[in-house]
Amino acid sequence: MITRLYHTEEDPAYCSFIGGSNISISSSSSSISSSDVLATSANATPVFGSDLRDDFYRDVEDPRTESLREYCYGLLLPIICAMGIIGNVLNLIVLTRRNMRGIAYIYMRAYSTAALLAIVFAIPFGIRMLVHKDRGQWEEFGPAFYTAHLELYLGNGCLGVGVMMLLVLTIERYVSVCHPGFSRPVMGPPGVVVFFTCLATVIVYLPSIFRGELIKCMLGSSDVYVYLRRDNTIYQQTLFYRVYKIMLEVIFKLIPTVLIGGLNMRIMMVYRRTCERRRQMVLSRPQAHHHQNGPGYVKDDDPRKFAEERRLFLLLGSTSILFLVCVSPMAILHMTIASEVYPSFPFQVFRASANLLELINYSLTFYIYCLFSEDFRNTLVRTIKWPWLKGKLCHQADQHETIRTARNPPKGYQMARFDKRQKTKDKSHHNHITTTSGLGRSSSI
View 1: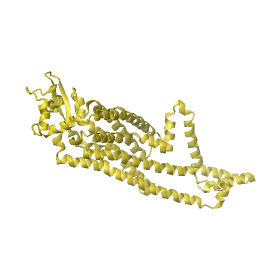
View 2: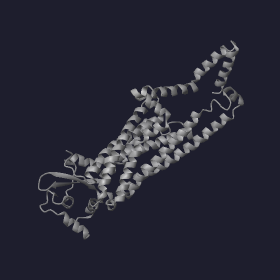
View 3: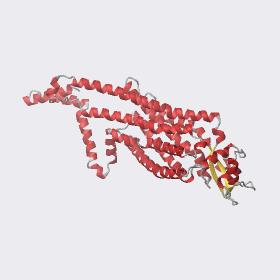
View 4: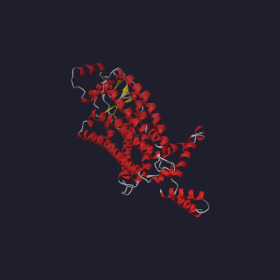
């Protein structure tokens, strides 16, 4: 049905150049040999038009490019995709727990979902680059149509959604830390924001569907047709597409990189000043507290708070640097890609590196959270509860939760405990000392 609605162009010069005597055009009785085309290209005589020049440059590639594809798309890409799929699935499992119900976790779930889909859509891309290279040759219309029109659209669309979710999450985090007086959520209801962000991103990426086209050729003298993919050079050379390509990089690469890095830096500066003020207040308390809690130690001067501050700095700094390092090469690639540089081996190395780095950026989120977030690790351990983890790690997670509850008990529990100690104040001198210590603890909270 779709083959009737979709018009596939038949180009005798293109088919003959690509396949030589093996591929020819069905409606042409005379075929053009590839040697004639090469001779024509060498003499720089424009017989077949500018669209053939694009394919000529792509067909003549460096011999080392094949080995590069095998290492990058046959070895490294499957490893990165496997790590990304496992990490994002575990991410979604943890972020759907009862203790992960805040506004930020909604955006984190949307980000993990978009990253997971982008990694899944990268698998057909890697297979195509490894087996069919840039052009491809398919006997079935469906895979050819997907490669020519949907492959990059779906992958880049999911990556764009992930970037926007990370940007919205950073803005919400910035407002909550730097401007706590503002009403939240700042961007609006999280579910509505996620829906309209995804919808807008899908619409913005729609023009990229037409960047490729299919050519229908016939194998030899048989009635077997094959479909080849090539760039729609006429469309890509229009002023609209050139401006559109720059706009995409500015909206989904340049602006998010600057905002995410700048806002995270501002968050770290404000949070550090807040922690410094809190530390100075703790250290300047009367010596009576030192006498009650031991010499040289203030009870509320909790080293865990300082460790939490350090982990937050590492989390924000690592995500900002990772985003900058992994996304910038892809933006440069999209702005500099051209048919003339395709045969260059350094360009192919840069292209493969940019593709892998962008996948790495969306594959490491789970592992960064596990490394720097204690709450995330504890929730993961309690959720999984594997037999070899239940006896040790789950006990440690429950122990951490018990210690945290003991250090910061609920306010109602504190008042009840205070009243009970007040009633038994005059029973004995030992109880009097205990009550005094309890009063000191209650008054310090």
